[in-house]
Amino acid sequence: MNIVMLTNTYLPHVGGVARSVAAFCREYRKRGHQVLVVAPEFSEKIENEKDVVRIPAIQNFNGSDFSVALPLSGELTERLDFFEPDLVHSHHPFLLGMTALRIARSRELPLVFTHHTLYERYTHYVPADSEALKRFVIELATRYGNLASVVFAPSESVADLLRERGVKSPIHVVPTGVKLEDYQNGDGLAARAKYGIPEQAFVVGHLGRLAEEKNLGFLSEAVLELMQRNDDVHFLVVGTGPMQGQIARLFEDHGLGDRLHLTGTLQGEAQRDAYSAMNVFGFSSTSETQGMVLTEAMAAGVPVVALDASGCREVVDDRINGRLVLKHCQRELIAALQWVYDLPDHEYEKISNSALITAEHFSMENCASAAIGHYESLVHQHWPLDDSLYAQWMRLRNMIGAQWEILEGVTGAASAALDPDHSGKSGS
Image (cartoon, rainbow, N blue to C red; front, side):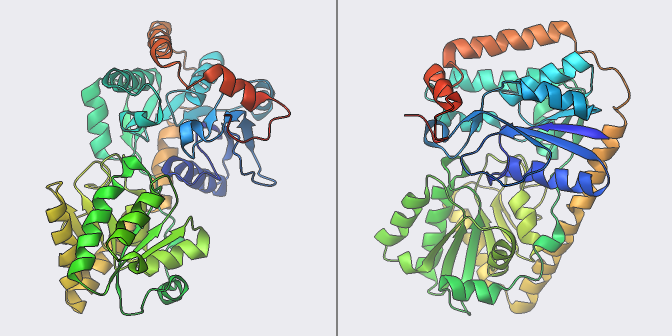
């Protein structure tokens, strides 16, 4: 098959959607399928990348580390004519998601939409954030789902939510799989030595974007309390983001800065070693659609403590491969972390082995096979979009545009992003 992927975030951005798209592309190509990725430009370039069309983008949108694509075509049409796609797969309902709709509509191709994100949890990145905007964003994603031939939900929780919101298109649960060998046999002792963590310390770990929507203040305060109770607890935080300084100040203010270890973004062997250095993976986000980092940690044999939320309850089996905290309060989260800390060695080994078994269930091979099976049921058919549904979606999009203008200072920012003399950094 010839598959076109359109995504608003892609490598070298390290967020969940970018990593998911990259992981599926690698697996599809390994199986002999052709994949063309359409994604925004990023301030950091990837040299000699293959089968990727880059779209001009606004860098560091509204102070975040996201690039926001401006859905322009030009070269894209020629590339698509040469590529001859069998299927269009959109990973967002807006920006390049709009381009995906136009491609599918003009070529009568099946449109697959993965609902990666609970978009209403991210409107704080937009200047005009409001409850009305959140409702608009939910409605936009729902109607976009009804324009798709099928919708992929990363977890059963999200599939149920989409049905409740009114998505009528067929919904299939297709999580992003974990490439098991990328997370196994890491050198945890080497990572501990590198970051100044004692060999015998109990390490609570976390990996991801250090951003408000990840609820990291909640997790950090819980780990801080755990440290105050137990002198050998250390906190290993992998990633970067706008909350990095706030987290560092919290531990410094309590005299525990020497037991907080901020590594920045890690890839490859360094990331694998960091996972292996952890005794437990702490996770307090309630905005996830799937637990990618949870399955990665489990692939390294690390038990997980997470709040009961979408994307987590499908992965964490309470007291089997970690702890699922039903009440979203710090006292319960601290107690769950302490429970893992107090486990005898033989009990800890049992939940570590259970974590490995869970990761195997979420292997990339299994998840890619499921996705390809759904693709194959769609290709080699004409898929004209319902014009009435498309018109409704466009009217809603325009209503959002009137209230939100989609992006802050969109005209000036767009001009800066497209200026041939512009350096590629965010406009002022």
